[in-house]
Image (tube, rainbow, N blue to C red; front, side, top):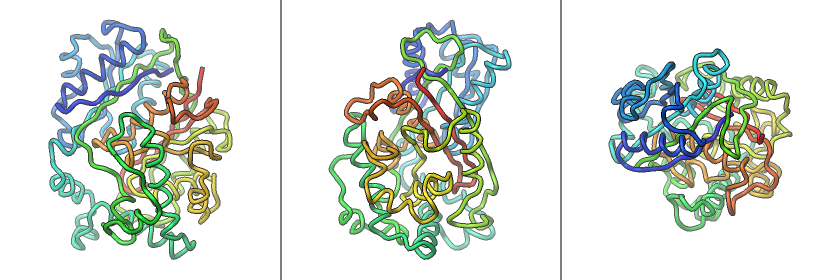
Length: 371
């Protein structure tokens, strides 16, 4: 079972400590109850603090420590690691922490520069791509192959902005319209600035995973699945179909004994508006080429067939860095507890969370349910 909540503050070490103390208190525990710690590393300072140093900061002794350093996928794999440690008897109450201060540490130019090194040095970097370029290639191919329109791509940030404005902690202000999204500055054609994730100053998340919950509203981990098929986008078999998405989601849902239509909500890592469309299609919720219409018709909104990114996602909540996808876990816990306020999905009992590394190259899914 997993319980927790996130809290943001600028300095890296302070974010971790604040998130840890909040999560421990939220779980109805004291710090000496914790016997395991898993840390999701940070983009700006991946080796500044390791789990042992965090334990030293908190003044706790641990039987089990681990670190998960891979891109957006820690949204799911850090909780799976904690669950596995408990099931194998390595620990009984595992603290999971993530923190980043993306823009504060690197600045916008530093963040762009760092991410450009993610491209393959021989086949990609010589052409000067920036991060949006990878997702722009996917969007162009999806439009060419399936007839996806700019209006459908724009429906994604419009939907997420609507959700984000209901989130009291959002970093965005003002509504979006289809026309305003399409008319925004083009970052990498066809993607405009509004179709891409934010770059935020800082944020953190903390969770306690245990089989012995003491809080009044625990949430259960029901299933987990992951799959990886390439690293460089130039080596991807397709720009619009990623078999590893289906393999990972099928494993998570199969472990939970569920089908994709059983879900009450879905939280996905959304670096660009094309990504949620591809995810919906490749996990089998929509047929290929139909996810754009799904969004345009309002089906991903609150009250729709499958509410997606109810907190606003990285487009309309925040994107502090590597731990951004763990905000989806925080939101899922709130939805399943019934504490999401104005953005609450009615009678939410089952939700699935997606995390990804690189360009949909390495995907993981976590299924959570209300106890």
